[in-house]
Length: 35
Length: 508
Image (cartoon, rainbow over all chains, first blue to last red; front, side):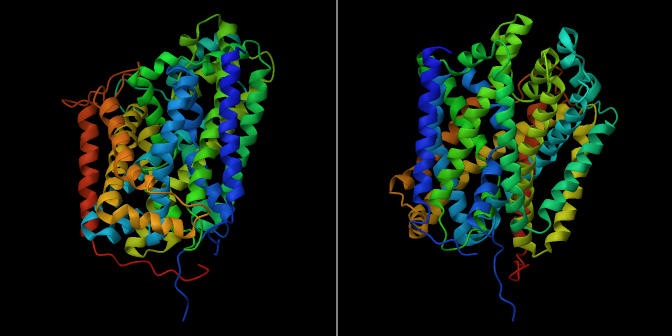
């Protein structure tokens, strides 16, 4: 793969991983799930 | 006295999987990768992420939040804002129903192809690769000369379509609790299959060349309005918003449960799946380029062409495991599609009808499934593909975008988005600021209308290269506006009907 393609892969992967990790660390800090 | 209550998901994970399953569909595989390549690779991804943050996530929070707040599907939400707005909840119900009538047919084709792949029915080697298009249009669809030449029903497709609707009925007739539990599997299975397909793709010669085309950034493309149209349109279509269903899915969330974080998780998971699917698709594109000595422009396709011509072409050329790869790909397609289909049918149609008329769940589910099957028969005829294109353009482009923009304007300016934000922040895992108000009031409607105006009026029904859309004195555009007009009138008719309301009993 070209350097540009590798960098795109790494940056986008980081965006999603950091975003999802942040969201999952927030679970339970606000509302209560009551069914 | 029995306690009256709204049906519930039975757990946060079930809601999240149901929402992710609705968003993650065929477009993640057959549309996103091609758009990324077409509009500048890494540069496109920047615009796409911007679109996700300023359009997709706030729009999803609005639909989840309003559904949760009013504890109703889309028509009930807008009736709650003001009786005069109820039609704006019914219009996307028609959008959802018309989409699922042909979406279910595409899922049926996937089943047909899963069977055909077992023997690589279109042929192996270069002869098979050359025959992939002819096999799809000729033998599978028996494509006629135009929309008025229906030809006969294609019975293998009819059989698969009946199977799809029977499966949908059994998933939906018990409501959200079963839907959430089924969605766990209809999300995890295609994820696992995409991983298998990626590994298969990466082990083929030429795969890396395909990935370079997929990802290499063309920064100059950022100055091109086409790139922004592509990115915003993909965000508008990928999250299953503007189809009424997310209001209903939100209405099944308990009143003290999070909304904001769920919208972020659903959106990020959907887009991560798209990005990942691009590797599975473009590794195959690179393989075809090398195997057939053709350029990327000759290979890459989007939509039906990618699924039913490009991928079968690759299967024909595979040195090993060709049949197994084909079966896995089309089973993956089935699972990608089926949870979007029950989202459209249950959240988009059945829940709003039950809210309005108080009908029993099993009965209305059976009627809607039967109706979906009967209307879907049109797309199983020789002229079905023409009608699929026309109806798709009418509802999943104009209908979805226009109703989505209007919904944001009404919530933003007439209901008062500040009230919605306070409601969301009161129970969510994290709070959102006043920026959310301006996104709903201005940015989301402007972004959606940009996509409608920029992409819509240039060419109502793009020429797919297999025929025209003339219907007597009318062309495809006339039919598109007729569909939109009739569904709008029906929406006002439903608004005028008396609301009987739903009397649900806890544990139903």
